[in-house]
Image (cartoon, rainbow, N blue to C red):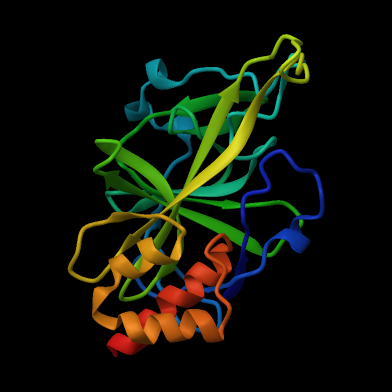
Length: 257
């Protein structure tokens, strides 16, 4: 099964298909992506579990009603402005499909919609979750991973997974309204600004922050610096383009084979 990965549209209402373009392939245990038919893995052999409302062990006390937006604030702290079809994958090898899911990028919690109300859950036994944006053939898959810099586990989107892994961390920067002054233009509204970070995990190594700059990237791959520098030059790699980051890490994996 081949699907297309979606890069986060966040607050934009433009055509999602135009924004996102990497192909993904799903075989085996963890999900992986590919940019040229390179096989990768996805959560598999998970049995369907009951819906949230039928699972007393989830506990009503952890479900919190959320309002999705405010007229006084532009943007949203959530991954999408609306809920989308999705699946939760639990550590006990069960899954919940057919849910309406979103993600709180500020509180690091999964949101879900049930019977017209929005809830959040901070359960730590949800190992993966997948979101299928509307009107696309794409999927976003997130894995719960310990980040040393955050000193806690967070859900990171899997951009690439083979010998090495490339992850994306979605962030939101909340900015309060500015009062007009001689030094800057007034912004009379609060807003959430979309931001992101990238992390890489090489085979046999711990996960580490990937600064999208040539010098920082080459420092992570000291064993093939010359080959990588040549590839970066010949392919005109743009470190601000995550498609190019995927291409670069796949090239590195190919060198290791």
